[in-house]
Image (cartoon, rainbow, N blue to C red; front, side, top):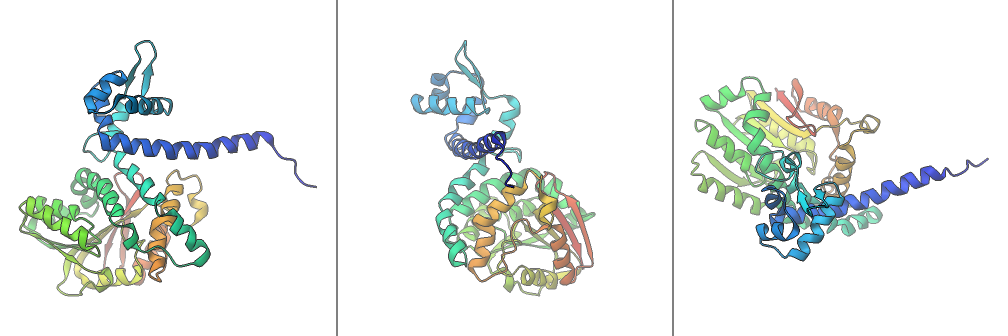
Length: 353
């Protein structure tokens, strides 16, 4: 006998679906607020739409409607008696400033991924994938905006100290490489902090490498250089004392080959520091993880498809600790320590030969 439809369950799920759509719209509006300086204007204190628009130098009518969406969406508080809007200090920490707590730059990913969604949908029928070249330059911009703040706040004081003794070795002087360095901000920050060490960043994107070099020149760094290089062609000599990858292994065409190259290029007493999304390799373990839908979703829309486009493994964003440990062990890492990154969405793998 067929189970009767639970009408309350239907209503609850319909509300949930509409909540997805509402969140998407609010994400786009967060992006507008970030790009136009509205959050910074609101952080100066409460105000009406006229005042907020004047602070930001924007058209009042657009600002008024945006403020209404932000207030009804729970981003802002609204006082009906004075018709003023307030960005609570706790919310401002997540939407303004230059610290790693500022999540507003992440709003760029939704329109960037949405613009490629129809191409990804074609792959559901035809197989293959959407190549990384089709995501440029938007993806580079989005990653740079989000990870730049993370590096500024967490790289020196959070990521590097996860490997015991590493800051001291960097201060004394070692050879360091970052594979998949993007626009090179991590390399440049390390080079500035540790002038006695030498640093090189590798990335497939010529545009990203050009930006990395420009920043190194602007910072006056003589110990940082950058090369456009496929990670699977990382040379085994000369050896590096530290190799880092930040959120870049899971979307490689051949992640096992990249890990083998990294292991081969590492000095006998070297350290490989790998930062990857915090997840289990087992779907059932990720049910209930609030970050899991984001990880699987961005995998479909970018990380998995760019790998499959090159005939790659399509490892996926949520490849997880179990698979990561297995693959690291297969390429020769005998000591693998996994620690939580400063922030709930990533894990740090500290690997030694």
